[in-house]
Each structure stands twice: as C-alpha cells, then as structure tokens.
Image 1 (tube, rainbow, N blue to C red):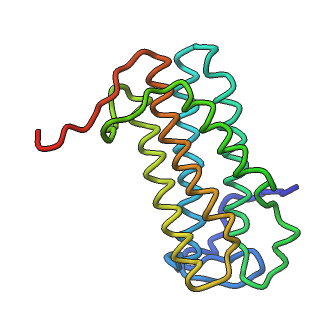
Image 2 (image 1 turned 180 degrees about the vertical axis):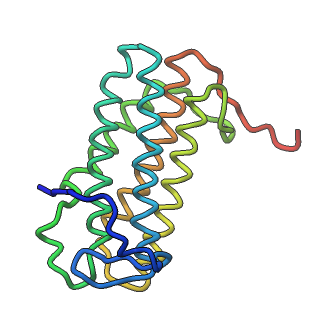
Length: 192
C-alpha cells in the first residue's frame, strides 16, 4: 500500500524527478516520457469509461469493469517503468500473468459481433467513438515511448506486448460501442 501525504514537494521544480530506486532523471528522459505517457493513457481511458457510463446502457457494464481492470494494469506497468534499472522491481506491482490473454479474449468477444472491415475506419460518428480512437492513439504513443526505452535499458517485453494488444482492444471497442449505440462507422473512402 502506498501513502501520499503531501502533493507537492518542490523537488521537481528544477526539471528533474526521482525514480523508484532513488536516481534522478530529467523530466524529458525517455523513461519519464514512457511512464508519463502511460499515465496519460490511464486518464484518457477513464474518459472513455465515463462516456459509456453516461449512455445508461447496461450492455456496457462488463466493459466498464474491464476498463477499470485495464487502468490498474496500466498503473502496474507504469510503476515498473518508473523504477530505476537494477532496482528491486520484483517487489513492485506488475502486470498480471494473464493480462495479455484477458485482452485477447475481450478483443475476440467484441469482434465476433462486428462486420468485417473492407476499408480503414475514421474516428467519429459519436463522441464516444472518437474518444476511443484518441485513447488508441495515446496507447500507440505509449508503446513507441516504451520501445524507445527498451533500446536503451532493460524492459520486460510484456510491457510492449500489453500496450500493443491494448491498442487493438481500443480499436475494436470503438467499433463495438458504435454498433451498440447504433452509430454508423466512418469508413475511409480513398481520394474523396
């Protein structure tokens, strides 16, 4: 359990932050960018959940619960990324062993109800759809940041795999939510 008694410390006022394990890094360091983007993703996904709650549809109950689980997994992933290489990260929260399999199962379940795509999908048709696409974009950016970090330091490859699979889930959920609320998909029409 973590205890946060004071929100501001003034320790970061000069542009540096302290990682788990005690080492200082500039706030634009590749590691800080990686876990910072994961933190942003947690917030963006939270907005997706709140938007589907506002529909009042009970059909979204399991997705809302699953999104909460994803937010927790992402916080675990971000905690691992915030730890100094070589620190005892085994004692920190981590992705669950079956996190990627759960995502794949959710993708398969939602995808069964969708029509096959014949073109790319453009974000829109509803605010909810567009927000899931924004979440997908932030997820892809988080994945790129973690890949950049993995080229410089040791990173658990499951972190990259999880983010890659999550971006797929966000895409499928954007389509599935649109289908449930009855909004047409915006299909890309080349050269129009």
